[in-house]
Every structure is written in C-alpha cells, then in structure tokens.
Length: 423
Image (cartoon, rainbow, N blue to C red):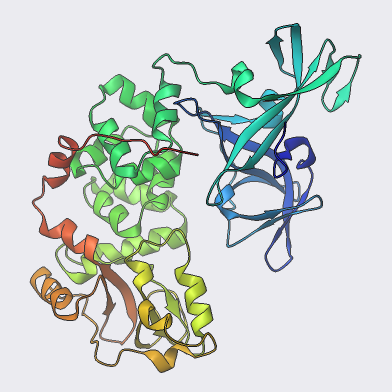
C-alpha cells in the first residue's frame, strides 16, 4: 500500500514551481533518481524544471520546500544552467513510464511511480503502479488490465545489479562522505577511475576532489574536457578551487577561468592574488554577511543553511553594502551563540563583539594560528586596508596549511570508506 505521504510522479508533471515569494520559476518536467546498493530504495535527487520553455534546469530535492496538489514551492536560489543528466541517473517519466516488466502472472507495464519523504528533506522511491495484461501509451491506456501497486523492489529496473560495474560503484558512493569517496578514487586503477569520474555528478566529484592530495586533483581535473573541468571548479569551495588552479599550467588555468561563471572566476582570481600561507591565501570569500539593520531572526535564518559548514555558521559578519566580498565597510562580527541568547527582533549591529580585531590578508600562518588560539575561534574575519571584508579563514583552512603537505595522501592509506546507513 502506498504511504499517505507518497506522491505519484505523473501528478507532478506540469505543476508550477514557485519560489518562497510566490514568483513563478517554471514547471516540473521529470524527476531524477539514482539507484542505491544494500537493498535501499532509489534516491530522488531532484526535479527537472522547464523554465518557460527556454531551458531545463535541475532543482535538488534539498531545495524543495513543499509539494501540494497544485504547485511545488522551492526555497533559496537555484542553478539556472542547463540540466545535464549523468550516466548514474534515471529520469522517472522518460525512462520508466511505459516500460515492460515481468510479473508472476505475465508481463506488465509501468503506469506510474510513487515517491515519498525519507528523512531530513530527502525523498526516495516507494512504489510502482503496474498495469497487468494491458498496454498503454504515455499517460493513456490502450487496452484493459488490472492496475496493481507493488513495492519498488519488485521492479527490476529499480534494483541495482550486484555485479561490480561502474553504476554499482557510483551508487555505493552516493551515501559516502566526500573524504570516503576520495579514498575510493585514490585506490582505483586508471581505467575504472576514468569511468567513475565520468559518471559522478559535478557536486559529488567536486567534494571528493577537495579531499584528494593535490597531485591527484591535478590528475583528475586534467582528464576532463575543459567545459566539465570548469563546472567542477565552480562547484568547489573557492579557496580549494584556487589551490587547484594554482597547481595547473598558466595557460590551462586561464582557459578554465575564462570558462567559469564570471562571479565564480572572480572569487578565485581574488584569492590567487595572495600568497599561499597567508590569511588571504587560506580564506574563503563566502562567509555569512549581513547589513547592520538585519535582525537576530534574519541572522539565524542565514546560519541554518544546510550548505554552510559548521565553522562558517558559527559567526556572522556585519558590513555596509555591498554585501558580497570585498564588502562595504566592515563593522564587526557576531557569534551565533550570542544570537541564540537574544530576542529575534534585536538588530545584529547591537551584538557585535567589540573585542575581536580582524586579521589582515597578509597575516602569515603563524599569526593566524595565534589568532585562533587567542580568541578560541573556528572562523575569523579577514579585512583589507580599506576596511572591506574580503573573506574569512576557518579552522579547517588553517589545519590544511599547517599539516604536512602529504597528509591527504597518508589519510588515503589509513581511512576505510564507509556508507551512511538508513534512508
């Protein structure tokens, strides 16, 4: 029996997609799923959305705020680049609807697929509607037959083969932490590595690259065509992307920067201006920045962003406009712990830690480490001579530069990959 919270995919197609302010984004065209190992239900990765008939984009399920009978509401901004399907992915409507499946009583045809929430804004496939003893065209029955609802694992197309193919390897990686994916890539022979890198989506490959030793990062990025390599660099944290680009030949690096989105490329170019072992060379240009009239409620909403690391979420920075780095005049920093103790209507500018001095981009690694030890911080502001916030150094950025250069390689040889259970 289908769970009461499940949604049949056929009912999603054509639904308007709205942002939280009620503005139209487009209409749902399909649902993207990926198969998983260990007898787990296929994961729903996101929606393919038609933007006013001009292009199709991908909206991750983590951005889906709600689904109703009349609309889909999404939160935050979405990537408006053209949707690109990876080898490890399936489209429910395009690939599964009308597909013939073998049933105990004879062949049947997939009529519909149901999906439901699993945990923490994740969705998975739950059931399939099978038309037995009949046939159909897209969304229209041709002949008679009974429709039965079966669990997802009774549909062979939704069950991953036990054979160790590229698809099974990629599916196994789906629930791994980036460091564990990196460990898997590190141990692969060149042929399998090339196949898996080609099949991984940009976000997962970017996360794994950040965890690999620098020579292996270069090895992987140079096996990709330049367009995809630029896409991967856009997905990486700007400081990690800058470190990787700094390892490439100048002509290759410049070509990749030219292919990146201008805003992403500019962040990387700004970081490349600083020496490696300085605050400027270690910082990320994407801390949480708020105007002085922002409230505690505004600040807490920002630090709840699931894509923020715990370190970046531990502090917000108050600046005059513009609020992108390099910002307007830097006014100060507010600890998230302080935000939790104050009324939601308080302005953040009233809560600035006046005893916290920012670092200069030219501060060396010894000064940066003393700064963290002195103030007991996990993130620290970096402000230039014009009093603009240019970024923030996190404690993991600092550790990356303090540990021996080959520490990632040593980690590759000493950490066993693990999968996240459940789901």
